[in-house]
Structure formats: structure tokens, C-alpha cells
Image 1 (cartoon, rainbow, N blue to C red):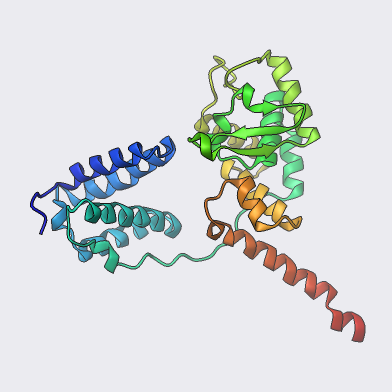
Image 2 (cartoon, helix red, strand yellow):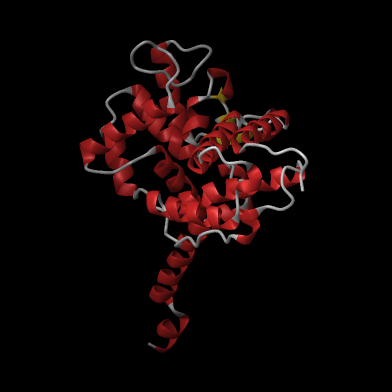
Length: 290
């Protein structure tokens, strides 16, 4: 039995400090703080030793009522990580979350844009900035936060190489702009006179565009065409388009910045569906024997 009893809130502070000391990306820290903070609040001042598997199951059931199953699973994964940390720090002898299975998640095919939808969106971009952003998001597959953090210095227009910063220098990755996208980005930065600092800027004030601002721009663009579009949908379209073009999953993982191949499984399902449809159209038996 641990000699000192910790409140969940205090344990969370120690956990977050440990993650910060490990040089975790700021976005990851904010995500941990938000998800685990919700759990701590739900537990209403409980001590770590007072949490049992029944509490964990009840909280998981509440999450599944409040949010999508995949989001609930992400919350529960973080709780398991947090409570294992509490075991390592000898705040508790064992983690009650180890006895709770993660919720099953229905496998859904990613919602992506069609070529016709992309053409419509592009045709109704009314500014150089919006055209450049739409094409750059489709070409890089960057997450909204990564995209908005891009600086002028991160883009080499001559080669099309974009350095995407994931919060740690050792995890920076390269993305690439096609010739057409480079042309649009160059027109935008020349027109705005951008020579340093934030690449994507708000239309008013000239400060760095935020992920919320990016989402609003895409939402307005989608409304003009009756299309629901979000930054993450552009990222999904990037991954799916490359996979359908035959790019192998290891290269795709590197380009997209996914931490594991498991995260690409839903996209592989899309490719499998394409393969099944192609076989149905071109079955050797059907072609040879009629």
C-alpha cells in the first residue's frame, strides 16, 4: 500500500510535469490536460487509491453517451496511460483501468472529397490566399495545427519542400508541394509581401491564422458549394488519394506523420474496397470465360 495518498488532481499535475520533462509536444500536453482533466472533474475530488474498475467502467459508459466511440476510446487510452504512471510512481499498487477493456470502435470508411468536389471548391476560392491554402493542405496532408504554424522559412518554393514541425525538432517531417501548388503559394506570398514569419495570415490584422480561422474559411467555402469540408477532411483526402495511387503504407506513414500503421487501417479499407470493385469489373474468369 502506498505510504502517501494522492488526490487525482495532484497526480495529474505530476503526470503532466513528467510529460513536459520528456519534451512532449505542446499539442499532446494540451490534449492530455483536457481529456484527463475531464476525468478528474468527473471523479469529484477522489484520491487515486479510491478509484476502482467500476468507476472506470462507469466513466467509459458516460463517454460513449457523450461522444463518438473513437473519441471515447482515445480518452480511455489516455486514462490507462495516466493510471499506469500512477502505478510506476507508487501512488497505487495496480491500475484499475487494466481490468477495463477499451470500447469497440465501428470501422468506418473515411469521409473524403471527390475530384469533382475539389474542383468546385477551388473554383469558388475568391482570394489568392484561399486558393493557396486549399491546394497546400491537399498536397501536404498537414494537420490544422501544423499547417497554421508554418512559417515563410519552412517552405522552399524552388523545390516544393515543406518542413512540418510536430513540436519537437527530431520529429519534423518533410512534405511536398506540386508545381501547381507552388505557383499558387508564390502568387499569394508575393501579393501579400510576405518575406518572413507566419506563412498563413488572417485576412484582417495580418496575424497568424489559427486552426479555428482555417476551419471557418473552409466552412464558408463549403457553404458556397453545398459541401461539408473541414481541415481534417482535406487530410483524409490526401491520405486516401495517395493510397489509391499506389503509394505504400510506410511512405504514407512518413508523409502523413501518423505515429503507427494502425492509424492507417481505415484508409486501407478504402483501398481494399477499390480493389474489390476493380476485380468485379475485370475478373479474369469473367473476361476469359464470359
